[in-house]
Image 1 (cartoon, one colour):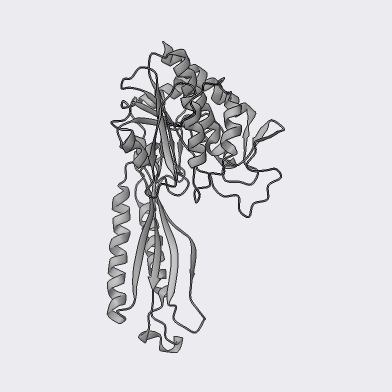
Image 2 (cartoon, one colour):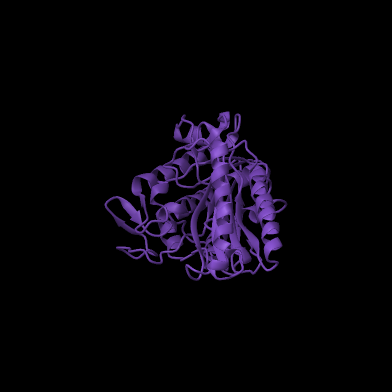
Length: 393
């Protein structure tokens, strides 16, 4: 715990947001100054928080508990990292919240420091009120680079805090309740060929042409998937099926030399109810088959895979508690799903009921002049006030 634990007046959600945005917690950099501030702020209001560091100690998740020291807490979950501003044209300082025309501009205001600020405010208020059901916060790192920080954080929470029951992940959903999303995984692919003059093609190995076989495999698998009957759980999604995609490719030296290298990334977005690992393993098997064939021509050739993210789907729950809480507090009775991934599936996989509900529109995330409307922020504040009322009963 920080040395300075002198109590101060509680900050408003807006004041907390102002402080959080000032920390440039781009995923490639440390988030420790932000974690230091949150830890000290909570300690100043009598709340002990706990850290879990990444492997090199440059980043940390933070989690804390308010209310009775017992199981069954509602968990408010957000990530602390943001995407870069490099190459974007901002009309105001991205690291300062700027209010104009009913909007709060700044990197992370929407995705998702707006929710983080509300969660921190709610935890302090829960402690001050003395709620009857506990409330927890869980602030992760490295969500923006593949949701890699949440699983070790969730594991670290076990045995340190009483086990929570319902996790509300505050990704921007315009305060609509999201009860399902696709899972995802991705591979960085490096195809290593063997250079010869293109007139001697059979004696070399073109990394680009061999890589194209893998991309065609993805095309063929997409066609196979889309030709199959739609599973009931997939019908709510747009598109209502699993997809495989290659967005960038590089390689080659000259038009008349077989390419020595080819690099691309393949991602998969897998609907709930399908086995994400089965899709991943099908690709791994195809890579192994092609790798062996390349090595028969030139032992130096081959394919290296680096799996860079894996996010489980959020599966709609039958009578799920997290969804029920969000619906009571928002009055939203519609069913909502999204095709992007979040940490919600990771909480669900760890035994929590999970749903997504947070202020802001995902369309504003990652953009230059990212913004969160004041109306959305205020709706998030009302949500937290109602949650506190419910926990106090």
